[in-house]
Image (cartoon, rainbow, N blue to C red; front, top):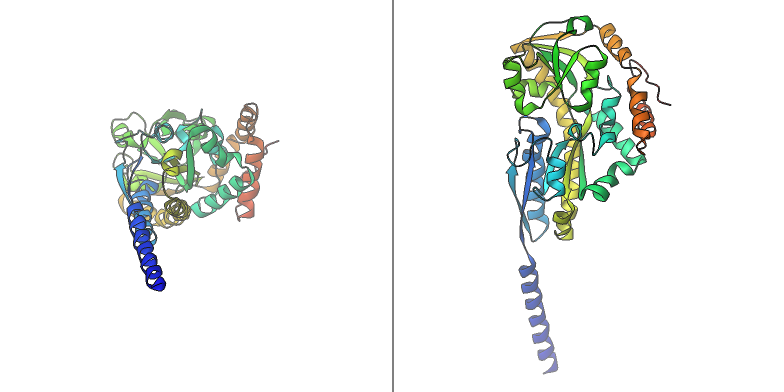
Length: 355
């Protein structure tokens, strides 16, 4: 009789345990967004890779489900509002360009301070990963100061110059208005070109109405956002592939998730990070080929590239000095970046000196 009672109690415990497990299964809805449209590669990958992989892996490996409410193209937060939007919980997960955070994250645009770097997004990403690994501040500041977790560093396709006019030498750009975002406006100013702050959300209209005559831009945007229509000249100047976007998640939203779901989001964030380098590298060649069929694509004389790099030779030291004075490890980060790029196989056209 004892054995029967024990078996009954064991069965009851198993049933109760199963009921408890079932009761704990939850459906989580997360708001995800960017100020950029999905036509920009990283934002498109947020939709097609990050969201889908999180949904799939959570469904396959946990008792929970995750779904997303999307807010791309600035429908919830503008390009300049993503960091604060995630910090305040307006969105749970945000993709942003640190180019728009000059006051909050001035050092995180460090690759921009060393222009004419590698045009390979996978090398750019490896270089950034090396630097972040050696300078904990780069990752920790998101949690310590901005109430969010950095899930991914995001590499861009290599930057070139699209224009409404043909040009061959730096002197041809004098007096022309060229758009950029944040610190890369200095690439123009030091080169003697008139810089105009803008964003991709307004680029087509502003190019069409001659607010400016060109854009520092990767080829995917020139294709996907049809910037080739007002800008029928695309010059392969090779400013560099910059890892200065990021994917972050609000800390409260992250901490409210079960541990197994948290682990999957971190895991997918790392995989998404790698995808931004791989896909941008693949897309670069394809997009340049597409542009060759649509408009005039010019290969710049390497001497022009070197001249432009020389015009910027003093700028990295200036930036390092300013940011060091703010208590940031700028000189360390820039020197680590120069070394890491070379370790990853890149040769600088001008080897900047930062003391």
